[in-house]
Length: 249
Image (cartoon, rainbow, N blue to C red; front, side, top):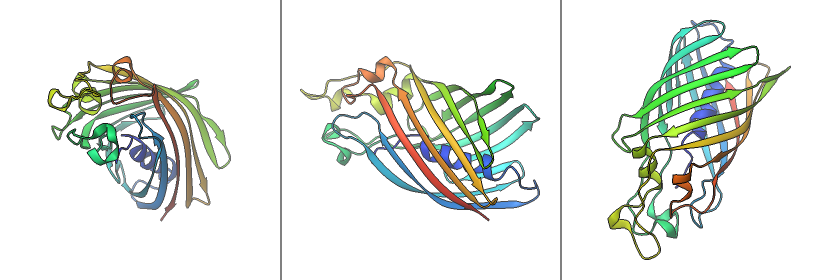
């Protein structure tokens, strides 16, 4: 099943930062819920897929384990924080996911680890991140930079954002390339260079009675030229909608 790399981890991370931040650092906090993710990654004749995933999270002090994502806050003050992170990358597909993949090897998920930083300013929030595959699946890395402007409400916030995500040659080629032995008359051999995707979106987080958390996001990621030219792709980017609910214990 094809699946976007970041949706599940992002949903769980948002649950952590929004719902658990008010808890005392000595408390162990748990959250449990469910999310629906609808996305179209642009693969030929595959179309939009909707996936239901669980939201399972726990946090103790500076450490968070949120389903497929773990993080440890190494430094933080009122405006800046830096964390060590690790998360599953849900990119990939199986031959049965669509006719375009017939005769191709499966592309598997990976576990990526690295570091990220967040900077809060009077004119918005900036983020930087770098992760590398530690499972030798795609053997590549991704560097990301983001900027968003939060609008605060009584029970939550809405944040429009934009981000640039640089994917190394190994990463991009693994998920969007066609190897020599996979090439056919209708699916040419194709090898990618490093590429940068630009994402725009609106994220929203809502908390009611300190127990009920709701997340609703919409985003569109415009692919770099190397991905757009892949014979596996017939769209210029990926559209995604995410809706999730979690109960905080």
